[in-house]
Length: 117
Length: 113
Image (cartoon, rainbow over all chains, first blue to last red):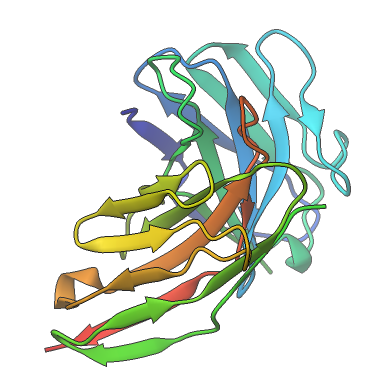
C-alpha cells in the first residue's frame, strides 16, 4: 500500500485568490492523479500528473485554472487558481500501487476540503 | 463514455441487518469494477474488486458479483455492524492498464446499534 499525505487538509479561501495543494507519497509511484469531489457529487478526474512534463487534463479542465506539477515520483502539487465559490470542493490525490503491479487499484489521500467565500 | 449509477442514499440500518447497495454501469469493452469505502475522517480505500464477468469480489464480509448481462455490481453484506458506517462508492475503469476511474455518486450508510 501507499501512505499519502495531503496539505492542507482544509482551508477557507477568498474569491480571486489561488491555493496550492501538496501531495506527498511515502514510496515512488508510477502514476499520480488529481480528483475533485463537489458537494453531493461523485469524484471527477481532473488530470494525470506526469513526472517531468505537463499534466494530461480531462475534458472540462484546463492548465490555466488547475496548474499541476510533479517534479519527482513521490510528490505533486495542484493549484486552484483565481478561485470562485464554485471551486468549493474536496480535492483528492491518488496514486497507483508502489509495487508497480497492475492491479487497477488506486490509493487515495484524505483529501483537501476547500471552501471559497 | 463510461458512467456509473448507484443507489441514492442515505441508507440507515440496524446492526445485523442485510445490506444491498445497487450499482449499474455503462461502459465499452471489458471494464474492471470496484467498490471503494470512505470511513469518517479517512481517505477512500478499496473494499473489493472484480475484473471480469461472473467474478465475485469479497472483503470484510462484503461481496459483489460482476454481472455483465445486467451491467451490475451490487454490494451486499449479510450482517452489518456499526463500524460499517461509511460512504460507499462504486467505480469502474476501462480495464487493462487503464487506471482512470469513473465513480458513482456515493451512498452514505449509517448503521445504528
